[in-house]
Image: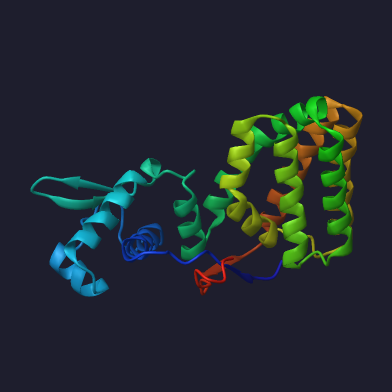
Amino acid sequence: MTSRIVVIPTQRAHSNHAEVARSIGVDIIAGRYAEGTRLPGDAELTAMFGVSRPVLRESVKTLVAKGLLTTKARVGTVVRERGAWNMFDADVLAWHLDAGIDKRFLNDLAEIRLAVEPRAAVLAAGRRSEEDLAELRRCMDRMRLEASDSVRFADADLALHVAVARASGNLFMRSIGHVIEAALRASFLLSAPVEPEDRDTVLLWHQKIVDAIAAGDVNMASEAMVYVIHNGMSRHEGTVIETGPAEAPSADTGE
């Protein structure tokens, strides 16, 4: 597959300390501040960002709470190892998209999806309402109408997966679906089925998910979901990933 640059817009921070936290967070995730290294001192950072010490300290507290930093007496503020980062934090996920996602990120995302989404499909097959089915079918209709490499196709695909999580009736699964929405959207954009045969396969197996949930077929619901996730992973394997930060929209315009 050809190389694609995928721009993922994220919402601009609403306060000085949130903007400083975002800037440092993106630098950490992008590797500009490596794991185990110490951040510059307060005087340097306040001059760099043009903020007061209280604003900087609030920013650091935010990053400590998200697992990216730790503060140590007589040492300073140190970047924590990647394993300590809270990947279910909406800001941390958004900062990954701003920094540029890689194969490792996509593989980690696929693995958590495999741990959750097939079970969500099983539960949905047993618990779905008529309203849930109507939403799933609307999502399929949208996918069929849109070009495979368009943002609208990715959004329809995302809406279907979120609808499955909602139909599961499990509040934790619904919450996970909403938290990782932006990451899923990026993944779907990168694995867009641009070839006609790939598009047919994607539509067929998404329809199998919907049909299995409608029929209460828990085995097929799980099998179809697993296939869809693995199929997306296979398209990632052939993609040279080159992502860049987006120009974030203003707080007034939203996403």
